[in-house]
Image 1 (cartoon, rainbow, N blue to C red):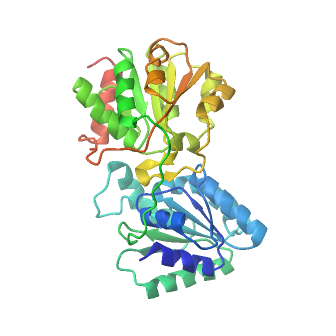
Image 2 (cartoon, rainbow, N blue to C red; image 1 turned 90 degrees about the vertical axis):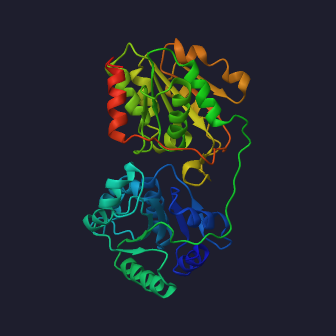
Image 3 (tube, rainbow, N blue to C red; image 1 turned 135 degrees about the vertical axis):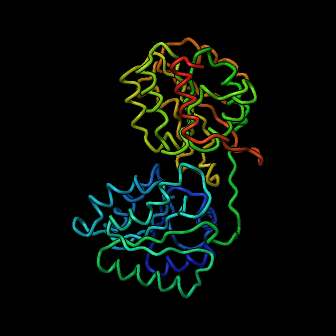
Amino acid sequence: MKAQQLLKQIEKMGIEVVTGVPDSTLRQFCDGLQTYNGQLKHYVPANEGGAVGIAVGAYLATGKPACVYLQNSGIGNTVNPVASLANKEVYGIPMLFIVGWRGEPGASDEPQHVFQGRITCDLYDILNIPYSVIDARTTWEEMSDILNKAEECFKNREQYAIIVKKGTFEAEDKFEWRNENLLNREEVLGSLLKLAPEGACVVSTTGKISRELYEQSNRLYGGHDRLFMTVGGMGHASMIAFGIAQADNRRRVICIEGDGAVLMHMGALPFIAENAPENYVHIIINNQAHESVGAMPTGCQTANFAELAKAAGYKKTLRINTKEELSGIGSMLQTECGPVLAEIMVTLDARADLGRPAESAGENRDLFMSYLNGKI
């Protein structure tokens, strides 16, 4: 199925707004949104719940349903605004969901997607949202029938979901976006590991940051025992790191996350600043894109997280653009009283042969906990 064809049909249905958070399963759909030459308005908010909010507002202003796209891992972020606002028994706000199905039962996928994939359809059953599943074999006639079902739901002030299996959309014009940053992310992560003090632990966000830290740590130190990789739960690494920092205030705790993850739950910044853990170091790797799922811009490319953290109350913040500036980050990592934050501007480059952790998530949990408890 061609994304452009689906987008044209969505526009013909009267939908004017398409909003969501990028997903690798929906990569071709997301590319199509960026290159679409119709009248659809496209927004990438901080999280999937925000996309539902945009859809609610668009309907209230125009009386026309909006389309919300997401990876199934983001369904949880939509549950509250769907159940407490959009549901037919509350305000009755129709909208169309297009959901990338990671962790589809019977298909090989990363461990963080397995359980979420198993319960994806069940979640829409619980939410009383009718749905259809499509894949590469779905014909356009079948797709037209699905969209007709969606329109009937809209008339009843209900939502409808289209759950998309991997490989459903054909590759068309690939969207390419570049930033103007200079630093290579993997090289930056290697430098941070070298500068981290002895006994420190690192909590890293989901996606390529964790994968690169894993490989860099194994290369530099022959292991990754002090690294906790937050492989799922995008946006929660900073609070995991806070929990560790509060439980063990003698240990330096370094949180490394991406700009997209920070945007998802920015309330963490004033919370961390207010609680002021002195052993907390916050690193934001900012490439202004959701790179791990296709490098679509975050929709907040001009955000200055160093300034935001300063306003929130962090004791010291830096914004780093060059190798020379990066070389001066040692004292922040090692000794300065936290919470402190460095925002490091990086390119969109990643190795084509970048690997994934060889161990299970449970094995890496046990390794990390043994390190924290002094057993390694």
